[in-house]
Amino acid sequence: MDEMTLAVVGIDFPNEDKARSNRRFEWLASVIGDPVTLQPEPRNRHDPNAIAVFSARGVQGGYLSAERAPLVGARIRRGEEVQAVFQGLDKAVAYIRVRFGGGAPTLPVSKPAPTGRGDGNDDFYPDAEGPDWGA
Image (tube, rainbow, N blue to C red; front, side, top):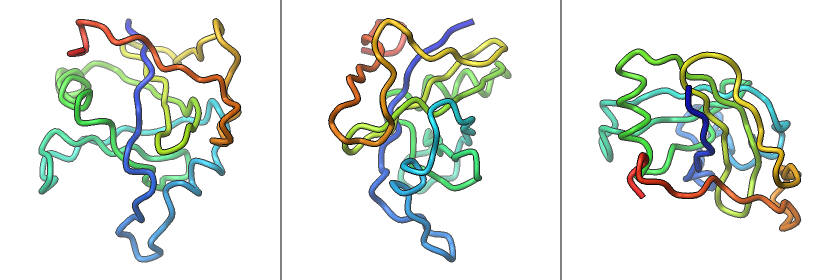
């Protein structure tokens, strides 16, 4: 079982749904700990490794960063169980906490939990880069 914090990018782009839903607004309306869904997009015209991230309400909130998506996608394709929750928002990036191998992700307690509102007072720091994830 592994847990990690991952960046969700592209939160300032509108979605291509009929309502042109707003990704940033969706994250602002989310509560820390809300479940999120990861959906690989192998037919994405920009990146076949793309993994879309959807809020608890089923609204797309962006994509995993291009650096992490191939590794996360490989684990999903191998059939590893994955669960994710909203962790916070900081400027142009949302963060999710992901757990592989069963069970719900736990939010880090070593630092104060982010407010999730992107107000600059979140005291949020993602996990340290590591060799297992291509850093």
